[in-house]
Amino acid sequence: MDPTRHLPLFLEEARSHVEAALALVRATPARRPDRETVTALARHLHSLKGIASCVGRTPVARIADECEDILARWAGDGDPEAAGAVRSALERCEGMLSRMERGEPPDQQAAACLVARAPWRLELDLVPGTDPLPLLDALARAGGPVRSCRPS
Image (cartoon, rainbow, N blue to C red; front, top):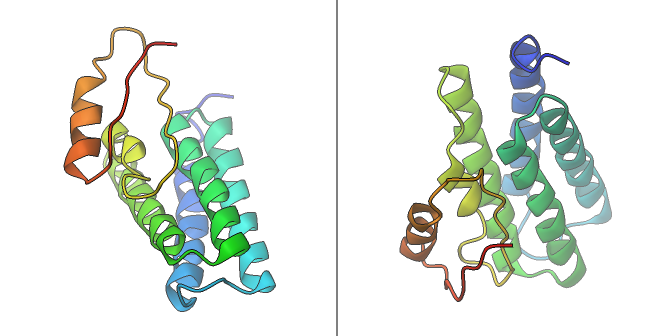
């Protein structure tokens, strides 16, 4: 599949999933969401992850994947910080889509910082030769604790 040929369709589909997911998150109180909301959010996130993966938009797919994990925590224990992390991640994803619509590359720092305030582990797969320090600096500036950085 030629990723550039399908970019307009991807952007349209991705935008619809992000907007629908954001509307659900914004309409849901920070406490534990009901089963119907969780199911709808999970469906949008999983669809977003799938279409992004199909067209090589890895940063968007990673955000959607991370959101799925955060959603599970929010649904499981009603953690209000998880609700904020899902909303923030979807807003970052929305920004990445806007950049792509303008022909700009996706913002790798946005993908790296999506869980800056959440107590989860974040792993980065960087292109060889990419300097991780700007990403780690952005994470630290966003308030996230940076404990270690090691190559895999």
